[in-house]
Length: 420
Ligand code: NAP
Ligand code: HSE
Image 1: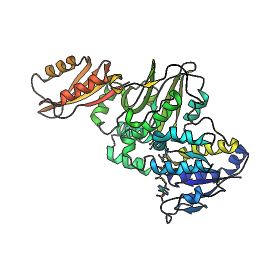
Image 2: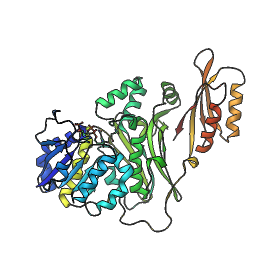
Image 3: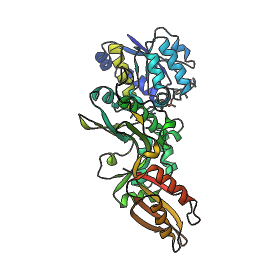
Image 4: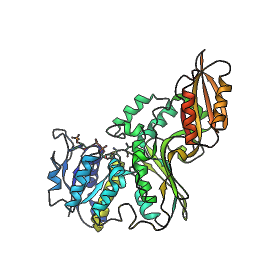
């Protein structure tokens, strides 16, 4: 019999215990051994959780319990779970986690500590979709050319509701929290950090790149307005928060931001809490992964799959997919300034003669070529200029936005959304 201790019995932890209880027959048949949850750790012992397991508020009750074979870390955070997981590995216990924030900062240290001890984290990226398994095992014969997709269910749910039903930002964020999609601190979702944590994990498996959130371009959906959404619709785009990893010679660009994406693309059609990730390998071509990216049961489905895998063999693949570094030219992170894209800008200006001419001059001075331009009056005195560009460098766009913001006839810092 395999005994599991769950540290953090909240949205996901509760579902893990329920699945192991409700699907016990099938799970033990697949694993070849019975798997039970021996105990769980929470902060608030007085909260009713509807589970017939022992509860404690001390992580040591699980870490020091010699009967526990697998520690499931579902408490969230970074440094506190890092200490907990290290202690579990030092005690020789296998670990399963869904904690992408922990892995975004400490995955290489944990890999070094884990060595041959099983450490699995399928649920950390894209909830119920087995994307880690696909990338680390199924596609291991390939050089990965790109990974692009929707990696945050909360943002996709919010953008879908804002686009289809015009629901206000605050109301829909609250609903995402109530549905158990959002992180404990939802600014991780809407600020793009959660998707960035996931992208960094995938980038390690695909490219062996050890980057931290601070090293890459991360923006969220906080500045997207109904005006941008209408522009997108009018020009045949959807707005999605995407994580993008792209190999270009010996460099890899990593970025998370809201994107205007053609409504004809598969990813543009992925709505609600669903995630969708496209991976292009040099031999296999494009593969697409689609499914629920957040929520208790969907995420717990991936956690329990890891538990079953460990129960079957007691081992896991090399945690981040490489048994040794690649020989030859190393891949490095492309500097953000060198990223190239098409851009959409919304510039709020005073509606008077000469403004348009001045603006186009500034575009020209930064080597940025305009593709389309629309003027929408907001009131008698001001107007919004909605502009899309041809391909330009990130450094040029940022410098131009700084210059535009400083002009007396520009009312606020221009809003920019990249076009893919
Ligand atoms: P949650 O509902 O907030 O649950 C966290 C649990 O951890 C709670 O039971 C909490 O106790 C317990 N906890 C927190 N700090 C603790 C401490 N210091 N000592 C003891 N117990 C502690 O969070 P969640 O949504 O289940 O997420 C858990 C992890 O899964 C996070 O890393 C998250 O990023 C990840 N994840 C979540 C989802 C999702 O859809 N929710 C999807 C993928 C990955 P109390 O209940 O007493 O407060
Ligand atoms: N808060 C995350 C999301 C949970 O909305 O995608 C799944 O990782």
